Length: 309
Length: 309
Image (tube, rainbow over the protein chains, first blue to last red):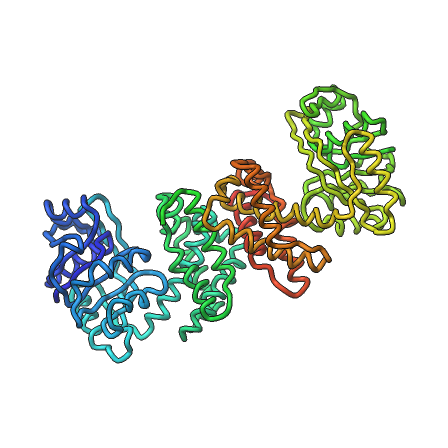
């Protein structure tokens, strides 16, 4: 397949590398000059589950790419998705599939502003990745990459992407439940990520406070109420238990939003988690005050740190 | 008058000193050993609006005091009020007036667990004070000390306390509106104090964020709804404007709750501000989710800091 990676940070490079090694024609797209230059001059240096490799990859800024593609994987931050869709639209044909594995809520609607629903493939991944230097990344995982067609009648395209990923060692899996899985992940991020960022603490510290049960339950209740408007059934108690079990597994770890806000002073993805729930609640005629206040407080903290949004 | 100060920190020493200089028989009560010892050995050293003095004062722990008093001024932290009332009840007669000038909500109810309403005098003060060392304090102000009898038919006792304070240079003023003034001060503290503590910022930083208008308006709306159940009319827009005007006056200052939580890692008075509003809202059959969440988040932060409540 002819594949583009729109947003070639750590995860984008990992996916691009695996798909190229699997025999596909892969083009990376990104905006980071030093990263682009390093990959052009020295190839991509990547460690996959500890195994080092170096491979020549095509890379350029979206406006420099004149090709069109069979499949585009978007790997931006949530708040960069719309701008990226705008920047790559000349590389999309009437049949190009766009695969979105981003965390957070509302992305399918954003993508649908640019392409027909039949071409949208939503998914989730549990692979993780990091950037060590421009042109040098690592990629870790083995868990499934679950995908599903947004348009129920277009299963065939998603099945082809699943097969391609499976052939490349990415453990592609066709899912009937991507929407549910996305909401469930959002429940984890909308509690642990949001609260650890706001309270400047790690996950273990959060769950040792006297308030964590109340906080997590209230937030997930609001997520569940909005999920129901999209016909997704989030069982509050079961999800609270799942979040607590996840928290116990990860322990004294700082979630990614904490790294963004408190450590690196970067904009957070709060608008695509608690912020999206607050907004959708209001669009549906009810309120989600915990999600709304948490979103406002995170934005206030971004402002205090001088973070530009 | 025979007067006791129950809680002789900075403000208690200031009031006690002024009332003793004005000719009253004043006894200080406190629990801080070093402070008690310093005052017993060297007298109280105090600076009032910059003017230094040293005066011999009676001081002891509540259980060491066997006298009874005409008037007791309580100057504890909000969360120490109940324990202090318990500790001093042997010093109260059927006619002892208890004067409470504490910030925060719900104190009259706590005092009413120990004495008849006819003996309760509620008030507010804008004097400020600090402790420089055990036995050494400063006291600043000139503004009014407004007081009012809790029982509407018992104005005479409050009038006597007003006259006594006025005679001592404390600018005692009889007020018809102490309940309103208390709620209005609570609105200031429940917005600026609570939010600056949670966001670890000063007042100027808070009011420069894009979210401050929403946050302050939502919180004051909840305060106003609960105030209405006590027949206190808090006009939301007027109070929001008042809070913003107050914020502009004080500027890049850290409010006292920020000092407690973030600087000194001490328990906060949140339960007597936003926490009291959340609780009273629920007791009245509605909810105050912003106040409730803010209270939970502050308590979570206290827990993270290992602050014992």
